[in-house]
Image (tube, rainbow, N blue to C red; front, top):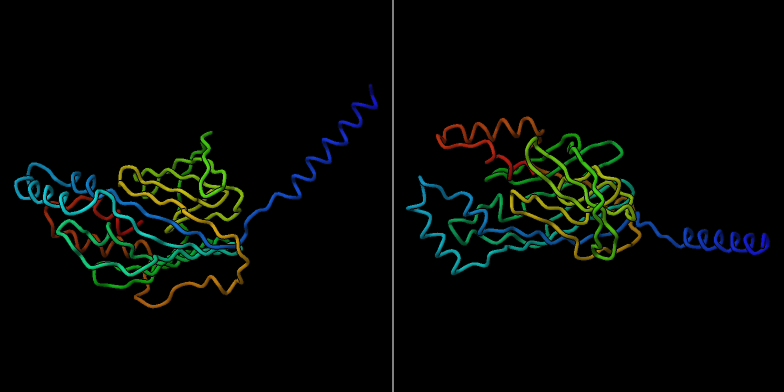
Length: 257
């Protein structure tokens, strides 16, 4: 009996060892993301008693001419502890009164150096190009037990809060041991493959993950534009909006994500 138990133990050890040796952790590669914007929900959220006489009929016309969801593509290249998020394709020109470029387009190229906790983002704000240099975004994450498969990777759910009030839902995989994600989102023990801002009606999901060997020079920060940090950008935006009597602080959110 002891011999049987001993033999079983050896086989179990060999099986676990063999499995561990075959587990592959992706440390460099390219991720393709699809960003989805629920335009109907965003427009509806901004219609109120003061403007509905003007916007309600325009919204009905918009729904007849445009789909509910706008889809945009982007890529994330990562190697070691550096990532580079880049929009794919050229943003189309404004086709509707409701097409706010800060919401319905992608304006940011985002480089993250996770070792040095540095973020460099080239972004278009109105007609200005800024090179935002600051520390990585601080997100308060809370882990859950929910798990789902995304692009062939097992992902765990975490809920977060960013910019003090914006609720975030992320699914990350520890099979890609890089603390990155779309845009400037990260800070989890693995790569974010799905991200949603439910109250902002925006989400990202990885449609493909290519596990390829890349050199460190494949991930370089963007250049050009007026150098600025987050605090300076917020002050500039407040200066632009302060003349609007109906200004709300949440109007700054699309510029800061």
